[in-house]
Amino acid sequence: MKPAHYLLLAFTLFICGCSAKDEIMIEPIDENIIFVFNVDYTTNNFLGGYNIKLPAYKESFTPVCRYKSPSDFGSVEWSDEETGTILFSGTTIWMGKGERTFPEKIEAPDSYKKIDYITGLPEITTLYHADLDLQNSQDIDYKPVWNSIRSLQSASWITDKTYVYAYLYRPSVGVGDPKDWYWIIFAVYSPTIFKTTY
Image (cartoon, rainbow, N blue to C red; front, side, top):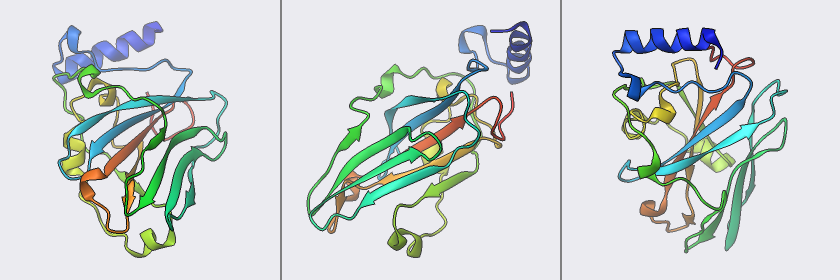
């Protein structure tokens, strides 16, 4: 961490009243990272998450979807349009239950450190994968979802200028069970090319 970054961290801790052991997380200046958080659809419980590193030379970020409609078995994959980096993939089953296929494993909820700092609700863009989703789209109250992750150290860097996206993964469709569904929150960290600045 460069000296200027230490000064920024010290100033931020002073303003927020955070102790040294509860430092707000500041990532290396030369990395583009997607922080991913999973939140249960019906209970809003935090289910864990993972990080995806993107190439430092990126000039943009646009999440794109490959979706196969589940006449019986289907699939969904979200990736970064510019580099093709996979962000998430999973199967969907009609009258059944699919599963996440990428990543194979995620970090457990209890492995995430909580700090005495509450991250404010950012503007969240909902991701849809099909025309049917767009036709049925509506305003979503993300406050209960965000409340489950806002005190995580891994979310402490997020501001109202951060690009944040939400996708509702529904592995069971048709007569699907909402208890199988969960939100996937993508928070984009980039020190140089996105609207978040550090």
